[in-house]
Length: 384
Ligand SMILES: Cc1ncc(COP(=O)(O)O)c(C=O)c1O
Image 1 (cartoon, rainbow, N blue to C red):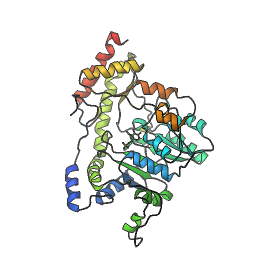
Image 2 (image 1 turned 90 degrees about the vertical axis):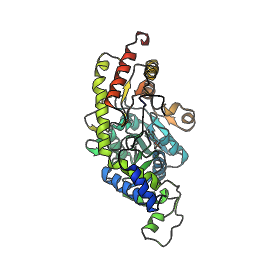
Image 3 (image 1 turned 30 degrees about the horizontal axis):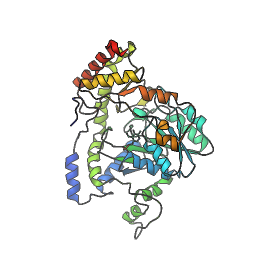
Image 4 (image 1 turned 135 degrees about the vertical axis):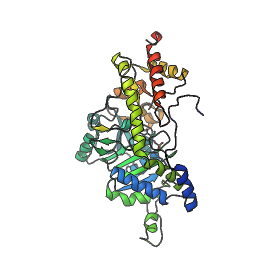
């Protein structure tokens, strides 16, 4: 149990999770490739408009698959933000590639397309972009850049299930996109992920790579007499137990997004006066973005102010957290990657961002308590 009366995250069930798991057990298939996995995959394909979704154990797995499918090899460069989770970078390094980190835009917190353009070299093969907090700003410019330079675009849409940019689902812009169903995300299965393959030419190889490098998918469809080792691969596919839980969540996705958006809007309205008084900055999201309420964050003036707030909220039983520690400045980042251009926004935002509790178990009253506690801590004269 959490020590906090208002935890940062609390995973909860939303529908038929237990019934589905019981049905899977009764059905006698618990490994990968059963009926629940297939239903989740078809649902994701329909939601995003993707020709093929493959459920994986995690988004990290999906990123490793995407990098394999992109054909990244020794010396190939992949441009990505440093302000992201480690999985994109390590997926590239596992193949002998080089993550090239570029700065983010300080408003959208997504890759800065101009910085990306400046980082392209003859060795660049792909771009992995993140839709931070489900904001799609910049994706249109990255699509154009990739087309112009012949690069593969991978959307790390770990935050972005159910979000859109100019009405188009995030996850449908790149040749591939990755999703996360980790317990901290909107739609959850404990650990969980998916690879969306939008380029039909990659689908056959994706099926093989996902299933230990074998053509078992073709065998199961009756297209071949036996399945054999065809290519590199790993055991990337999610089990039926995970998929049974996930299906119940996916079926409630609209309700999940609607409630998270309500909570998001409640924070946003209540914190306006603090922004006007100069205590913090709220997210500034373009009208083009249909976000999913995944994260509510504020930006403070500096890291000391953030520490004061984290401690002040903790004293009132509220768990607020920072986010990514820049990858370019980590021990492995310094060893395996390089930066292109200034990283000033990455360093600054990473030190000033504070994420507030956001989950389906959160009540309106709890949001109001967080806002009041935040206001009290911000107002303390000793905080500067
Ligand atoms: C942007 C991003 N990508 C990938 C991941 C990894 O997701 P998973 O835990 O499903 O591997 C995370 C984790 O939070 C993330 O924030």
